[in-house]
Image (cartoon, rainbow, N blue to C red; front, side, top):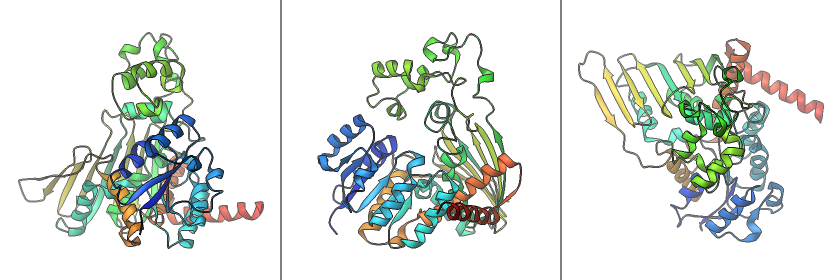
Length: 428
């Protein structure tokens, strides 16, 4: 086939700086021909960067979808609450889709997307569960499948969000309030639910969960503090200071604060914008720590620890087998194997490229493109159909946390379907 034509919906940090950036690596396979983005500055920058024709630069989704079909594929990377509608319409119009996680921010929309997967089986419809594409987690999967350490019995998995990342995204930023976006375990950790499913090789049977917003709240605001870090008397001693997080570091998140994150621009916008607010004076409500306990249908058990209170942004894991244990760090890309009865451990250093998520971002995009080019759905590891289960797990864990119950996944899903059908019958 000719070059794959791609339209990107949402030219923010993921749409422009991740997907756009890595698509540039495949100029012989694809070209970006359009963009949908409500913010003019982002639209203009994206248009200039990819030399997009004016007629394919859209402010609103409805303007883009007025066309019957102008490309082969869309990458949907707008806000979480805006994922469902463009996905549904794009499938109906015949597009292949790469959808940023989470697939949707409500359970009924997840159910509808599950139904659409069955209806449009001829489309490449992927979700950006990039952990399945990392050399690190694929090596762990290889170890599990080899049976060299016996049967996998239990998993301990940790999503170490990082204190500065949590302050940016989930206290000051776009994902701070579950009413506007989604619960933390869905927004941040449907990735992790998915990788637990991948490693366990089985659907989840039941889950319980505990956690709350423990620290980033008004109770911890003191008299000498300021509502903005630039007017705070104790800012110098605060690790959550916006000055420290943005001005003292050159991180990708700075592009979420300002499109051109020079020191001057950051100084100005932090003094009047949301990212300069005191972390104890924000309108956030998502939990800052959460522990989930899971049992899979094949009787493998797992604990998943989600926490804001870590120095590094990293995923760490331990797999416990009948004849040994395996531990690893995604950030360090190392795996340590301990075989029972042997004194020496085996350390594996994983080779990977420099792309985000431990090499997963670039590999996922490559898989998406080649699945379209070769018309090969079998090569896709993170199909939307597979990804539904991880989202159901995340919603079930959140329900378990709030209700203080053990939630059985099948019953939870069936009840959700019944409720969705009742609502639709009432409306229509």
